[in-house]
Structures are given as structure tokens and as C-alpha cells.
Length: 178
Image 1 (cartoon, rainbow, N blue to C red):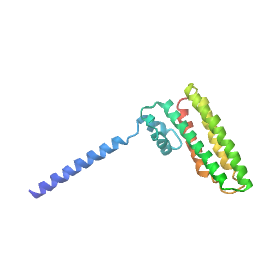
Image 2: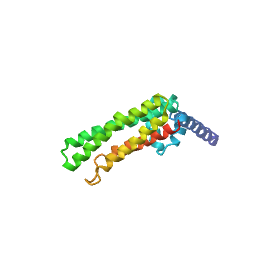
Image 3: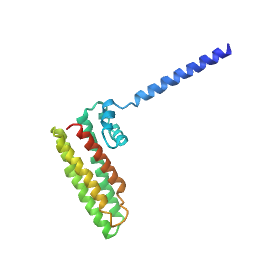
Image 4: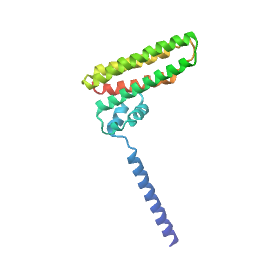
């Protein structure tokens, strides 16, 4: 009798635990379009993280997912501009100051040119135009990082890498529209 009671209790515990795990998994499940889209990017986990930040992604088509990713590039480029200002306040030497000036110009081009080009391209139904904007953003982030080559370690490596990688994700999403 005791063995049957223990078996029933264990069975109930297993059923409750399985139900709780499946309920939890279904709440955290990414939409199939987000998963399949991110699988076509060079940074799958980053893509998921970027798209999860926006509640719009749950019901978005690929065009909207591309706009979300471009918006993430804009956010990171704005962070880069903030980082440049912060490093400048530290009173770095002439060479670092010159590299920071170049980075400021680069990120101004990302914000005023590349991101706007990509957003307009997507809104006007011209994904090739949008892809070019994100390809340029990748090059611009690399250009900023390269500006510190003769100076020493770049104080902007983290943010340059973030802009580079998110722009690659955005570009890959946009390529699904070509």
C-alpha cells in the first residue's frame, strides 16, 4: 500500500513539474519567423536578443524585423557618440583626440546617412538601398576602430564591435527581402 502511495505522489509531482516546464517554455518561445530569420544571420543569439527587445517583433513580418534591427543599429551608434564624448572629457592625448574626432565623423555618417538610408529603403520597398546602408555602417564601425591602430588600445572597442555586429545582423535580415 505504501509503495502505491509513493508511486502516486511521484507521478503527481512529475505531471505538475512537466506542466510547469511546458507552460514556462511556451511563454518564452520566440515566434517562428524570428527564429528562422535569425538563423540566416551571422550572429544568431545577438539577432534574437535584438529582436526580443522589441514587442513589435512578436507579430512582425520580415520588413518590420529589418526595421527593428536598423533601429538597434541607430541605438548603438548613439551609444558610440555618447562614449566618444565621455572619453573626450577624460582629456586624452593628441593622437587619441584625433582618433575620437574621426570616430565622431564616422558615427555621424552612420546616424545621418547609413541608418536613414536603410530606414528609407525599407519604408519605400527598396531593400537593396537599405542593405547598402547597413553595409556602410559595418565599414564605418571598423573605420573607427582602425583609427586607434597607431595609438594603442581603442577605448571604443566594445561599442564599435556592437555596431559592427548589429549592422551585420540588420544587413542579413534585409537580404531576406532581396
